[in-house]
Image 1 (cartoon, rainbow, N blue to C red):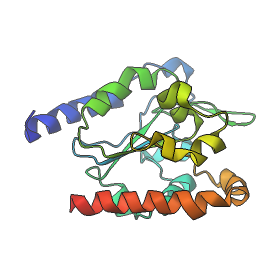
Image 2 (spheres, rainbow, N blue to C red):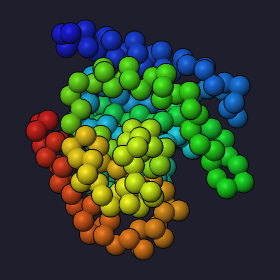
Image 3 (cartoon, one colour):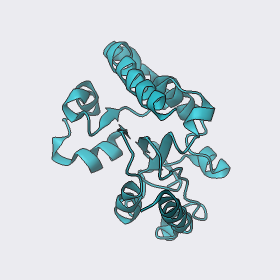
Length: 202
C-alpha cells in the first residue's frame, strides 16, 4: 500500500473499532471503544482495559496509571498522544465494570476480533509493550513465567518481540518497592529503547 492507502485503511479500521458493540450486553455503559493507533506508529502499548475515567474522557491512559506509564517511558503527554509515535491498544476497548476486588477483566471478545487487523495495519512497530497479566498471557502464551514478577524480570527472554511490564496503577507501588530491580534495571532499559526509536523518527 502507498502512504495514502495505509492512512485510508487505518482510518476505516479505527472507525469500525469505535462502532463495535460486540459485548454491549456485558458492559455497564454504552460501548465506547477507546484506542489510539496510526499506520506510522512506532511503539505499541498493549494494556488492559480503560477505567471509568478513561471511558468518560475517551482518551487512553488519561489517569494516574497513565501518568506513571509516561514516567516509565520517559515521555511527555504530547509525545505519548502522537499516533505516529505511540499506538495505545488495550486488550478490552471498553470499561468492563467493577467488582468487589476492582475492575473486571477486559472483555474477551475484543482482542480476537480486532488485534490482528490493527497490528497488520501498523507495519512500522519497533517495540511492543505488554502491560499486565492479560496482555502477557494472550501474547506470550506458554512462554509466560509462573508469575508476572518472573515474566517482567526475564524481559530479555522476550526481546525484541515483546517487552513485558507490570500495570502502572498506583496500587502497584508496593510491588515496585519490593522489586527494586524494576526501577534500577528495567526502566532504564525501557527508556533507552524508547528514546532511540523516537530519535530515529525525527
